[in-house]
Amino acid sequence: MRVLGIVGWSGSGKTTLLIRLIPLLRAAGLTVSTVKHTHHGFDMDRPGKDTYRHREAGAHEVLVAAGTRWALLHEVVGAEPSLPELLERMQPVDMLLVEGYKTHPFPKLEVHRPALGKPPIWPDQSDIVAVASDAPVSTDRTLLPLNDPATIAAWVLNDVSSSQSSR
Image 1 (tube, one colour):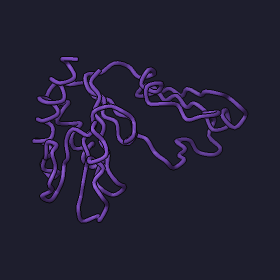
Image 2 (cartoon, one colour; image 1 turned 135 degrees about the vertical axis):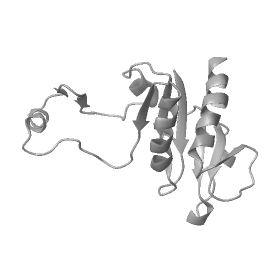
Image 3 (tube, one colour; image 1 turned 90 degrees about the vertical axis):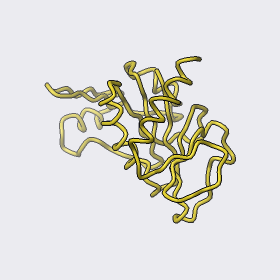
Image 4 (tube, rainbow, N blue to C red; image 1 turned 180 degrees about the horizontal axis):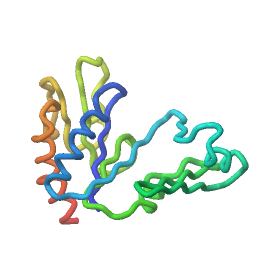
């Protein structure tokens, strides 16, 4: 499974880029899945719903299923699972896009907007193989136009797919 991280500071446009890339990669014939990491707690469930009540009662995992989708809610006790542990739970696809996990070692594209006033991440991380920016930046990595998702998708299809296929 080919994996590409999309990293950057909060507000840089990681999610916007990711949701623009997915349909382009799908149109090229790839199956695509995503992983989203957050430093904030989240809950996909709502108080009063049966699945919420199951978890509240102490269920370790709750699987909710319908005709159109299913979701597995797993309560974490102890350390947060590592990215490789989470990836083991996912079905194989052609391309897995990971939003976040910027310190984990796998190929990444940094979304960098100089106007945010945040320093670039790429100088300190050799696994950031490309930078997508909305302004000119000086980098030794592949530089991609942030506002042109078709060009970024072509880079993913050509450079990321071929470099990971040869491993």
